Amino acid sequence: MLAVAVLIGLIAGLAFGGSPAGLGRPGFRALWLPFLGVALELTYGALDRFFPQWFDYQSWYWVIVCGYTLCILLFCWRNRRYAAGALFAAAGTLANFAVIAANSWRMPVSGAVLAAYGASPQPSLGYFVEQGDAALGFLGDIIPFVPPYGGLLSVGDLLLCAGVVFWIMETMRMGAVQGEGVLRHAGRAKCLKHVTRS
Image (cartoon, rainbow, N blue to C red; front, side):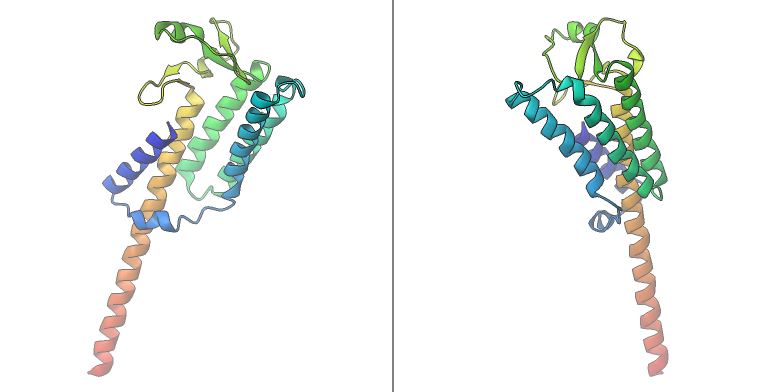
């Protein structure tokens, strides 16, 4: 889904007059924060998969959820000048945090939607199949996303992806504005050069 969001952002950025040059110098602050958050989740998931005998990973999963959420929210705050992207990404992060925290630090996955698509649920760290009894179930993984990856999405996931789209659009728009500024500056320099010669 993230790849689709990036593609939509690129198309929308071009459609609204943005420039791909802006992507080469986006000016994001503390870009390491989202990478740290994702690394925490991936590392913890890998430990659970390959070394399940070490300890009860689910019991401490709340630490990873809080760490990831903090990383993303701090990144949104540091880059609040990109207002739309920061607001959507922060809202999506908080929505996912709320539903996970309300369900003993597990994301509910809709059993009804899985059954409708003939999918069999697989046990996974931080997830559980709910049958309509989950707290804040409307924020859980209830939205089917089939092509090309499959799986279910939450409202928070969609908001996060919207944040990515707006971030790309905003950086491309800034690239276009900066490009126009460079052209204007070059034009003034050329005019001054002619005036000096005359």
